[in-house]
Image 1 (cartoon, helix red, strand yellow):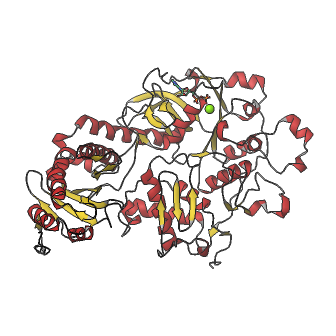
Image 2 (cartoon, rainbow, N blue to C red):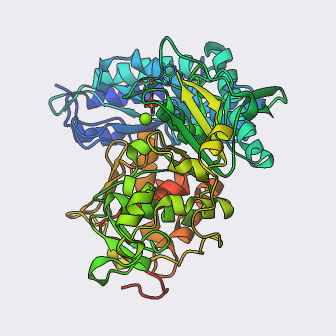
Length: 584
Ligand code: ADP
Ligand code: MG
């Protein structure tokens, strides 16, 4: 029979041998006894690659979300090049590469497909700053999950010894030690991040809203996969008239299509690659992994993909640029709906994006509300303006452009937008051509709608009492489920329309940011812009970790204040006031 008394850990540094000893004594005990692994100093593993293992959180039982562990290793032991670690841009690529390598090494440890024994936050096609790898002046630390082994609810101590004392050092050797890593892959990840940043930084200097380099490969493997299409890809080749030259991070020039600021309309027959282009542009806010095909596709970092989203909640948004008198004396300047229509939801999305200083709107006809986008000549005669509350987007798009907010939109089915476009690009067999001149021969360019500057928005101040993160006995329960769902207390937040979210860790970060906002910032005084900006600044200055103190250390990844605002704005319970001080 196992002894139930565990040997005391030496109060300073326990070794890997102490850990093995402890696990040996835990064998056969109830699962909760794993809590004895908590040891603030961590367990020190020795040669050949010394590191410290910390157990930050022990899962409640074998079926609960896995335990959270952390490995800290001296920079010098990893041999990772200092010039990459110390360059804030390259470091993002380097950390992505380490996370990939650690994930691959952990896959080999065993467990079953959806229940791996060890798991790190696996990155996707976009290179994001993540909490799972952290670099300090002298250490590299990785945060990961482990399923601590059990049979029923009894601890399998010897399996845990295999996992933590045998497998983990192997993961460290193959995932964290530079000479065992693919140096070429790491370097090209760093280059990808640096190039994307360099290209994006040149956009506004050149009067551009977006750029697609020649040779880019935009289509994806399937509608459900973000991986590149395997074969038969038509690579991007810019029409000469739209071709511009930008410089990569190392100064080398490259050519591609410059999407000029203003209004760009993409036309073309069905299935000719229009949506594929816009999809690539909307993710041009991120850097992509080498081989993705979109490494040199960039757009303005504030770009927002806008779509109709009927059924969404809208709280106190000034829709008056788009919506006139509404039934039941509803005020369009403080529009509230629990069940917005296609058109009002799209109008709200635009006003909310402008509120967040967005400078590029991306709209695909496939997901837009037609009655919001256009109202044709005959319809204007049949239904007079005073009986139609909607001012269509076409009447506002030039006003937005004049205020520095560009639009790239797809309009394959109607010629209306040709008249308000600065540039018209036709997609034909996945190849772009510049048809602006021809389009303007067919439709006289017009300055439709008002020309005065876009009105400054009202302040939108969330009422503190309207957000309740309480759920059951927990005073603060804010959690993400997958990529597009967040629960704030009883409120289920649907983020399906946030098509620029690409990784579950971003959604987890948004959930944590909402909890943080509720705890520290939503006070009946600050407005939505101030709240989201304050969090963005805090994360920038102190890292993503500030979002997750004592919250079980979930994996989080970088997100924009735009998506944070979009999440807050969709909370079903949210109430907005325009004057500070109403905090009940
Ligand atoms: P549209 O929006 O014009 O109707 P899509 O962008 O949806 O067309 O593209 C239709 C199909 O063509 C998709 O299956 C897409 O993967 C494929 N496709 C798009 N661009 C390319 C390309 N450059 N090379 C090969 N196939 C492509
Ligand atoms: Mg389409």
